[in-house]
Length: 378
Image 1 (cartoon, rainbow, N blue to C red):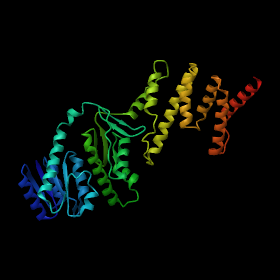
Image 2: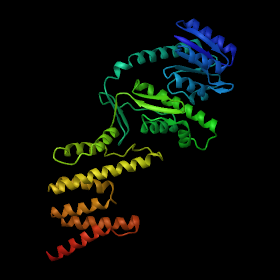
Image 3: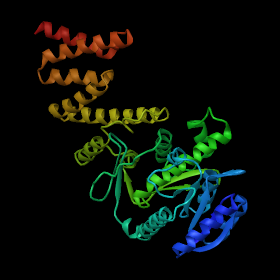
Image 4: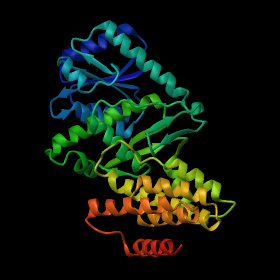
């Protein structure tokens, strides 16, 4: 394995070089106290590993690592620090790629073993990607492998988690660093914000390693792009369905039902990110629209039980949805459930008064008044 060492302390460089030679299997391509020269050497040579001091003058080690990974995303970066454990815990995800000065030979051997394991996994990634996995964004977030086993992601910080989901939401699109900083670190001074961003990006990359290349976070000139390999998403299925402009009919009703089942949970349910609320509401409206199409279609087919099932689900989830409430009354009337008509309208009336200090709209009010008059005549 070809290695470059970057540390502002000459003695530390020589000692690390001695340890790596002792372990064997390494070709020391270069060692640098100047981080700019070290970066140039990494970019010009075919390098497998960079041993990099986190705290070097003129350039934060995390930021330097980020610029290196921008050009060479498969590069292995091992951080070195003379700070105590709290400094390591601020970055470390799984005790891999971090060494505390003075470096111990046995600890270095462990790091080398883990890097070799990662390289072995990476070699077999292409074959492993032949089968499709699945990401579920509606309801509980899940990443399901080809055996439909969930592969949960563990996050060290809430910022890294939100950053991941934002990039996942915008998958396949380049998102600039300035947008990400404005989203997550708008109250930070620019250099501090960049440092926080680079750290979060590093955390995300480490977290995604266990997915073996299914989700790739890549650098661009001014930002990042999240790419998916052999991953199916429920939200993509929905968008494809919507773009077909399929009309509800006997031969499409089962597909309507499948899509509605797919998206019956909230988009990114349980995550209270500010930016997700608009998308959540947009998909809620799509769910309501498709549900109402089902209600009206079954009603016209005089399949009132099926129409009622869908209508009741809308009224339960979105009780302020007036068209659903009106269809609820009409279906109950058709089925002869007059007591349910009266009770449902009264519940809706009370809800409107409590929530909006208003009465039900004119369409449903007129229908109910007409219905009451009809009942009095019978």
